[in-house]
Image 1 (cartoon, rainbow, N blue to C red):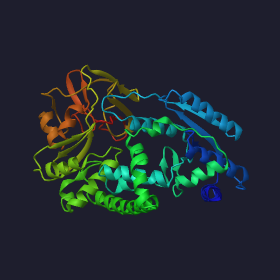
Image 2: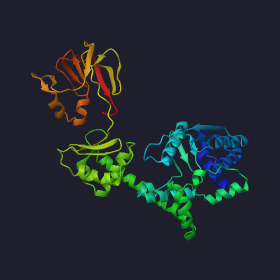
Image 3: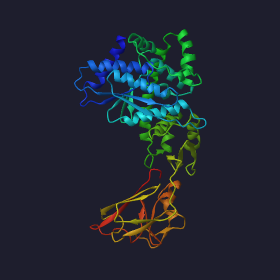
Image 4: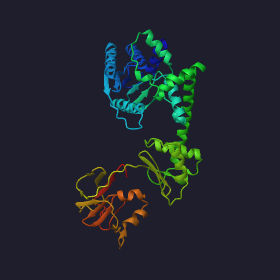
Length: 450
């Protein structure tokens, strides 16, 4: 009992004592035993803290609207917070399960999305995960065939939304929390869904963990230690991957060079690819897909254009570079768009934005006023500066090393029927700003999917 309070006092002092401004500390409160202990014990620590800048503590409850008792649980949590003089916030989520989707996973994703939306810069979200939860997470990841990143399980503190998520009870056992709750005569909620062993985590908790504990009483502590070792190993792997990705930077922005990756061992190639994908906020593909990337992309000839797809993303090769792309591209407008060069921005609905900046001695001639924006259909020609004849746009795009999937997505500017500019690449002869003292129109196209 005293150990629980001591752990929270140490956490409080370590994280908030030296801050220049008090953050908001959100307590995730389901009403179950673990989170009730967190709310009750932290309320006590907050009241006795001599920290000069005491953070604002707020309790948030997520109503999943799954159980018929959901509203009753919300009211219970509200009453507990009123008795502890803690501000209480209730948020609601609604699940929309499709065939094959996991109820556990969707509920967790929606719950954390709601919690993340509350976070302002420097805020903390405290959750009541403990050592037994850590062991269950490790076993769950192990049975999924996860690598060291997955087996690292849950960190004590990590970046979350605009702030941080912290788990001050991660070294406490479930038994310690139960003892505290009994001593203080806490009344908590028992969610009936926790007994349903068709949910994988519940099966581990109800069926597997008791068997392991019977044979190895300290199994949870030992597994938590293994998770810590995996976290250290993952940190080293990510450091190596970051260095390898810098060394293997491609010709294009945010690409990797295949020839440089092929100087690495197979294990380091996969490590670098994983880091590259995750660093772009994309969900990792399966191990089989990573192996396919090595075989089909890294080992393909430079004149080939292999693709490996998963979910809404794909990895492509163009010459020596690897591109990570979304497969759900915006629809290219079929009708032309009128561009007034006197206006600074032009939205192309569902596709992107044209930005126009007046620049001295650069860009399009300032005598131009209105142009038409279209996209490539085939057969377009462009006369480049200081050339006597027109060139096929198709050949120019190849010469400019534009990847094939981008060629139909580059805005073209026309004066009546004459192509005068390929945005981002070239301006036709006679239409550029040829006076260094005059103001021209520099044009930029912004499109996240291009």
